[in-house]
Length: 89
Ligand SMILES: [Zn+2]
Ligand SMILES: [Zn+2]
Image (cartoon, rainbow, N blue to C red; front, side, top):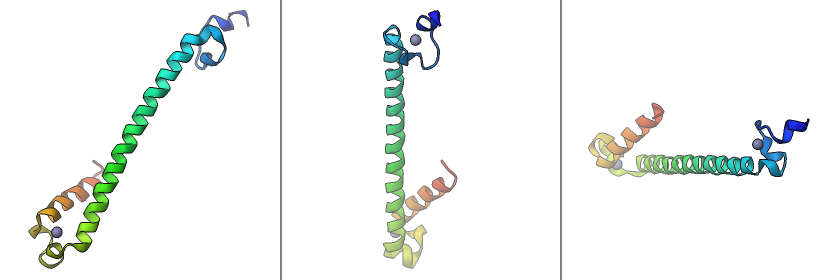
């Protein structure tokens, strides 16, 4: 148990003052992870908003309803968007 303080292992940042540097590293990792997650969340949210917008358009656009989405510039864009979503892009 003597060397527990001087060797490093996963989670050693919680062992005490000797692992201060490890704790700093752990914090850096957590911050990086947080940034990644936040960015992914932002992307997912933006995508959800785009899709909601596309679905709203599809439901309310007269041109799309009467002449078909092919005749509507917005409708064509939305169709491409929804297709991307189905393909999981
Ligand atoms: Zn350590
Ligand atoms: Zn339309």
